[in-house]
Length: 141
Image (cartoon, rainbow, N blue to C red; front, side, top):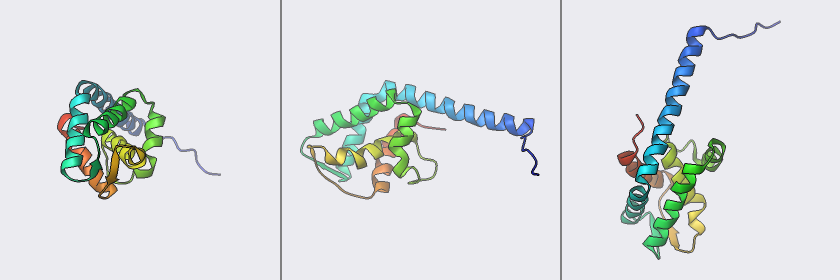
C-alpha cells in the first residue's frame, strides 16, 4: 500500500507565500489597469497600427474595442480570464495576464469586427507589441 503524501510545514509555507505573492501582484496590476485604462488602450492601438500588425478603417473604433476588452478584464472572474486565454497560454513563458488577455481578444474576437481590415503578424508579434505597452504602465515584478 502506498504512503500518503503530506508536505512538510516548510514546503506548505513556501507554496502559500508564492501563491499569496502572485495574487498580490495580480491585484496590484488590476488596480493599475483601472487607473491607466484609457492611456493603455490608446498606446496599444497606436503601436498595433504603427507596427502594421492591424489594419483598420477606424482608429477610434479599434480603440473602443481594446478599451472594452480591458474593461471586461476588470470585471472578469479568474475562470473567465483562464478560459479566454486558454488557446495562447503557452505562447510565451511567464506571460503578463493583461497582455495575454488582450492578445487573445485581438486574435479571437477582434478579427471579426467590422472596423478590422486585416490582422498581420504572428500571435507572438501581437503579444510582444501589446506586452511592451502593458509593461510600461503595469509592470509585474
